[in-house]
Image (tube, rainbow, N blue to C red):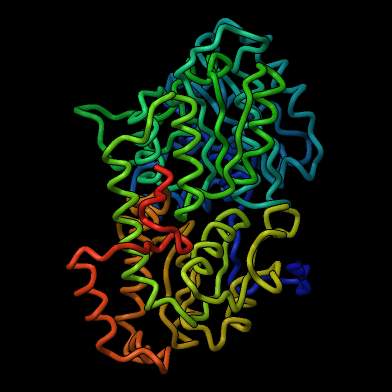
Length: 477
């Protein structure tokens, strides 16, 4: 059983995690016509805004209540009220997502009471705008918890409750924070290929995909899940949650509306995607489309081509728990070994399933000390200095990635995303001048074995595929 090692240092050295309010704002950015509002000082908002802009290379509609010294002592209710009314007047948002910060949380304000009073006194002025409160102190949790809390808050505040008439082909999907813009767009296409109608909350593929509105400045998000779509989630026939941290929002939706949910802890890897495709086929009553089968066949070929480069490699990972599980299971499934693991919190249940001997709750300083001797370091852009000092290649994942372009347009899930991950990692290993060739890892395999394998495949000899030894004629699809 994996051992979870608690944080032992009193200070972070090159921090790994980003804050809870940032994670909540990230989720609110996946709603059409939304503006996240940080209830705290300007500094809290500025820091998060810089990270968002550097990661997405886009204008981010993030606002603040700008609490000053007086508000910190006497309370920030007036600042919150003024910020909400100003946003309503100037930006006319469909949703204002309030994310509390450590400054306001430490003071112990009655946020729910303050917001209820504001809504009551300004009901007419705020008509047409949903105002949702999420309690996200910086001193607790990280992106993962903030994202999940924001999704839960939106469901609780907006979704109509009670049993309602269900649409048999409507599917509610609650993706985790670690799915990229490309992942969510590809996920929607996969579901739609079965003739189903997905409603994705949050949907950053519609708001953070790099498109620019025509001939006008938009002070809110301009894409994503509609507020009406959130309100009608209770009419879905099925809910699919992706990532352990999305279990709570799915449970809340089921409690409020009766919509049953299925949780997928990852959608990366052949077996996980097979289960997902089987579920979609069962819901729709239709077999997997031809293009889905073709992508599965491409992944099988990529597994055959790529596994030579993974065998015996040591991987050092640092990320949030659900992304950690997604990547660790991917690497071990390809024959690599997880030699060092660092994460942001020890409370997530998914950590018990990570294929590693021990997981350190800590920072990138811990990753640097534990990752010596690894063949690949996997984390976000703040780990680049550690990789340089260790002299090992680095694969950038998660948030933030600010020293490379296009991180949000990389696929990591389903058949195609898993295939792309195989190629990405294998190419990193091949470009490393110190890496041994694939045949050097096995003294009984000659350099010509790879060429023989290619010749065998060219002749059509595909009786065995890289699916845990599954014969090709027993393809579940």
